Amino acid sequence: MTVSAFSAAPLVLASSSPRRRELLAQIGVVPVRIASPDIDESPRRGELPRVYALRIAMEKAAAVACATCEVVLAGDTVVAAGRRILPRAADAAEVAACLALLSGRRHRVYSAIALMDSEGQLRTRLSETVLTFKRLHPREIAAYAEGGEGERKAGGYAIQGRAAIFVRWLAGSHSGVVGLPLAETAALLIAAGVLPDHG
Image 1 (cartoon, rainbow, N blue to C red):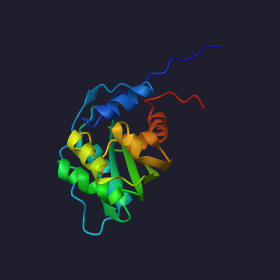
Image 2 (cartoon, helix red, strand yellow):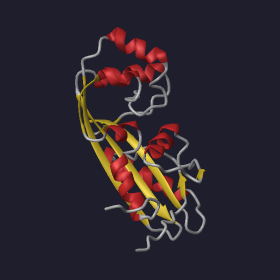
Image 3 (cartoon, rainbow, N blue to C red):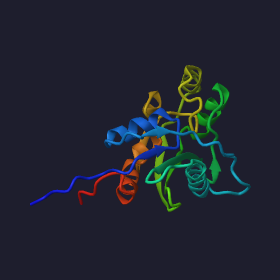
């Protein structure tokens, strides 16, 4: 019996996030290059968090040019309290404000991914994760905010870091909260020929 060799389509990662590169490495994928898309990520008036996450992921994928046979992967992660989209915290004050809002309550994280090939075919997936934070003491919030870990993070926290101790309950994709839902990503990469289909 002859087994044909699998020839993977080259992947371009439309993100400068080291976390996304690390997550891709977990499933054996190394991008041929990194490209940071330059788009306006402002939410539209009344835009729902899940709709916003998908739109931004698709716009990021479309903003990166790819050569023949290349595939572009883009993602966006949104932390939402109800219909409210929390910011990517710019400083310690925003981190503290986000944590004060999330303290003792349930919230959702939407992690959208978009895959576009050189012919313009677009594939998308959306991961939804529900989390509950314990009730945070003001001193706990202040200490975390001053440490800087939550800055430039959606919702003002990094679940892969010290903020892991805030989580009382989680249902969904842990990797999606970090920045790239691996089950959904692998399914898209298999469909696009970046990963082999062993199923």
